[in-house]
Length: 131
Image 1 (cartoon, rainbow, N blue to C red):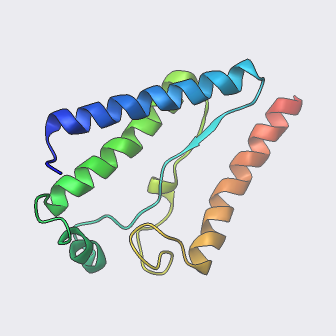
Image 2 (cartoon, rainbow, N blue to C red):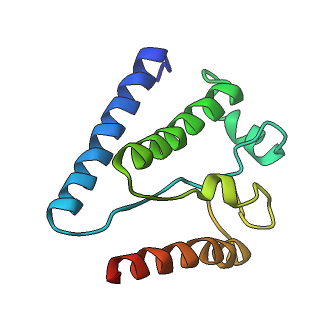
């Protein structure tokens, strides 16, 4: 698949529409939506990521990283625009093999660390809902 700016822009547009639709549905049903960015080890200094990126010779590691970051940035933007809770796992979980066994899947330590990030945010949301 050829990765072009038009393709990426189209994917981001569809993703944003989908997020906003899901948020609207939640609000209609009095459900408090929460968005999370995706943790990852997509980093130009990570040898596992560089090895993974070579599976896609038509796309550079820098392009893959840029696309991935664009999706997480869009999640942040939609959460802010919609005035809903964001749990930014991308920024809060260190991009290390200690937490992920590959570039996007948690190991046991990663699962524990993500729990430590998510739990306090969920408690805050629940406390504010009971208000």
